[in-house]
Figure 1: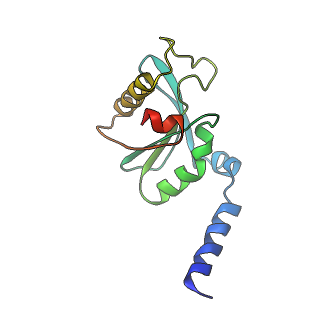
Figure 2: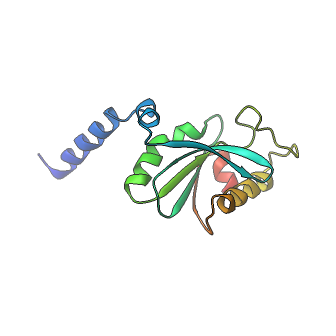
Length: 131
């Protein structure tokens, strides 16, 4: 068996045993709320180390980052996926704005509220715009 086939089998085995539900149920991924920029953001987080903020797009949600949170944790990072403004009950923008400037300010406030001075930003779709 060549090295690439072996690596592919290992990735498949990792995925097979780690569904979203398994990761959340095992306590591997933590849930909490962080107050930032006038909102209480629900977040998913895993690991410890340098902060990586994973920002979802539309119509996705923070849970779509679970496989990445797992991987980033294994690589030694503190991976955090917040629900962006407007994506949870009670999460409507207090100022009514969903523009890139407002979501970008949310990101900066989240980094500060998490106690970090900096973060690596990973964004998809509208999350990339916020990044």
